[in-house]
Amino acid sequence: MFPAEFDYERAESVSEGLDLLEQHADADVEILAGGHSLVPAMKTEGREPDVVVDLDVPALDAVNALDDRTVVGALTTYATVADSPAVRATVPLVAETASEVGDLQIRNRGTVGGNLAEAHPGADLPAAALASDATILLRNPDGKREVPVTDFFRGDGETAVERGELLTGVRFPHTDDAGVAYAKKTHPATGYAMVGVAAVVEMSGDGDDGTGGDGDEGTVSSARVAATGAVDRALRLPSVEDALAGEPLDPESIDAAAAEARADIDADRLRSDSYASGEFRGELLETYAARALERAAERVAGDAPTA
Ligand SMILES: Cc1cc2nc3c(=O)[nH]c(=O)nc-3n(C[C@H](O)[C@H](O)[C@H](O)COP(=O)(O)OP(=O)(O)OC[C@H]3O[C@@H](n4cnc5c(N)ncnc54)[C@H](O)[C@@H]3O)c2cc1C
Image 1: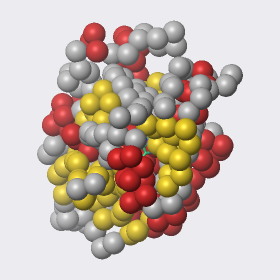
Image 2: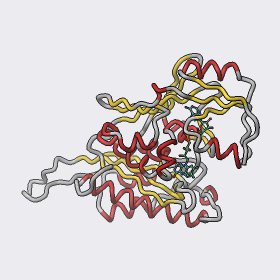
Image 3: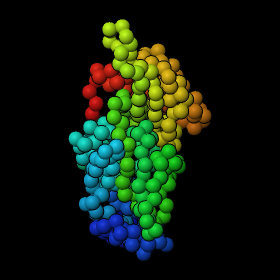
Image 4: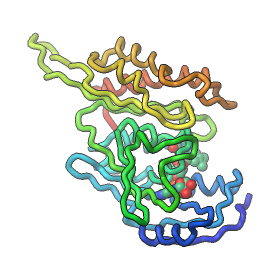
């Protein structure tokens, strides 16, 4: 299959990219990052941009770990993120999720920025970004714009990125001692998440219950739980988060919280296709919420390695 004809432009800096977007302001323009969504869509799904701007900006292929946050450039591949010692140490959920994307070829070419800008309903990184409380970094001709990830995803393929803007990176706050995990039911044909759940759970407790035993393992002081694959966009699951607050992270509280996973989603919003009905995706949502929380609990207890 061949794509329809298009004009090819190449940008070697963010400002060149913005200039090209401005020059072609009246055209249908796509950014070429890893190309692993765009190229198949142009070949087989009828996406026919007038212009493709190939973003070839080395500065956007970078991981920058600071004191309390790590910034990942838009052109950083999943493979780089998954293998980055800095990402693994500071935001292990992001490394773990990146390692779960597609297959080796996809991970070697697909980029963090492309994944978030494409906003596929079954993409993995949106769940990790939401559970991490990330901030999306954008550039436009007027300067910089930051969008909290909770305001970023608007629907299948729809985001807060405006015409003439480029996504330049993502800022992830460090998760320090939180228990984190991503649990995914992989689509058998594509590798996308039929349903995936990411969790970041912080505990309070001083580790000493005064009995001389294993100590006070504490209660949940904050939980962020986010799902992908279930509906047309990734979203947080506030009912699960609320159910965990103030509870110990034990099997009973995990089951009770996971049972709330469908509470914030109208049943008719659940995605349904030839692989899974909406009802089945709802079941997967509860199951994978429990799995993510169980793994996060093991990590809080220090029983399971993170990515
Ligand atoms: C067989 C297959 C299996 C896959 N499995 C998975 C999976 O398991 N999990 C998963 O999450 N994904 C999966 N994907 C999707 C893959 O991760 C893509 O790489 C990703 O969706 C897009 O990233 P990209 O860098 O390839 O972007 P591209 O394909 O180059 O671009 C995608 C879109 O984002 C826009 N864009 C890209 N970069 C920017 C930017 N910096 N600023 C503004 N707009 C931008 C483009 O205009 C385009 O519309 C799969 C894809 C294939 C083909």
